[in-house]
Image (cartoon, rainbow, N blue to C red; front, side):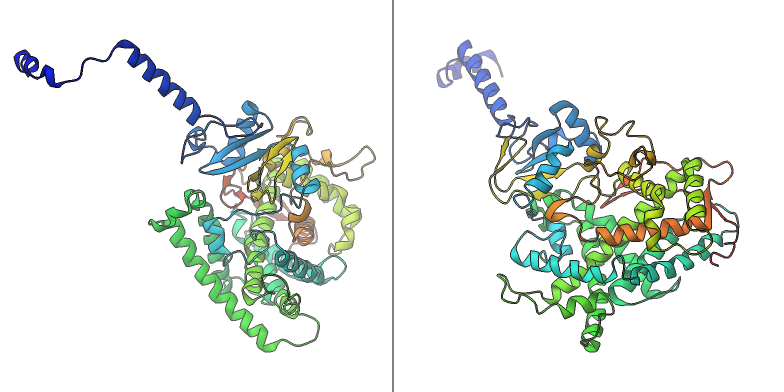
Length: 511
């Protein structure tokens, strides 16, 4: 445009703004930026935040949450807050505050947040792990706890079920003929079989179509539910196409079809006799508490309890076993020491539950496996049921609390050389087992894992039986297992290969 045209338009244009206008605008923008990016309200150290996005822009780098929170803890302190989208969340990286939330103020922080993926998974919170705290939840949990006690220590039923599965697992592992192979499929099949027997009295052989279906849908759920990500932060995003959410729904459909069929079969054959399995026990106790607020225990509660037994019972136990085997391959002296303890205390007879007190080092190996690689590095989020406080800092009702068990189990203030696999840290000077207060692999308080005792028994029976009957080593020329892991619903080891050799007298996998 020519200067002449510009001059002709000049009467119609506003005068040039003075310099102070730009300075004032810059100051105003700076103040707005500081206000918008200010930390979350409260006395806790906090990440900056933006409207809608919350603190997400400051949580990049590609690290999984447990490592990201640990890194942020070095910058902001062991307890800090952030905004996950619109949700105020407090991260706990230290065991003192974790015990305060889980134990001392357990009821105040016993709530669960609403999440799209878990709501789909549990038919609107009809399970134990993800359901919000309520009188009906307490009734449901008590029923599940009582049902699990039928298979607990002293009953002998779990021992018989596990040892039967162990025999099949040992035969399969020893069939490798000295070749290197991935133990994961065989271990997962064996643990799945135990859970199938516990839940609905079905025992499968390798290759059974129904067993394959159970393993397929369970693995599909595990691999996809963690991909919900943003839809759990912004529920309105579920209206958009979401491949992970679609796959999750497909797996849930297969799961519910199979479990519904098992439930109907159990209802048709139910009697007043001793329960055959978990479904029987739940159905027999279903009529309790029908006057509870929100109704009683429905078929959906029974189904979701059975489903949760698979989701939690299979993945956590099999993953822990695979982590321990990976570390034993890295540390052959630890494996030999466990086997020497088994030779001395058990000998050639099969291991039984009553041997636990005579095998303290083996128990320490299990504990160290759960410490160094917790399958749930960050516990399921808790929510504050009322206005409360953490470490003297006020916390409002509805605040989410994320317990970073990874940071707690790797805190150098409480664990000497925390990145080193050292089962002796769970023994005192007299060789007796000790449990430090900062060791909480199953959580604690009102929300402690309801299947903890069952899981511990399974881990003991599986690991002791395997190490009594065979040794695990690296294939010739192979690199040791990668111990970094990959995070989905649980922290899984990356695939690795082992060579299995029988110990003397156990060449066939069983006596």
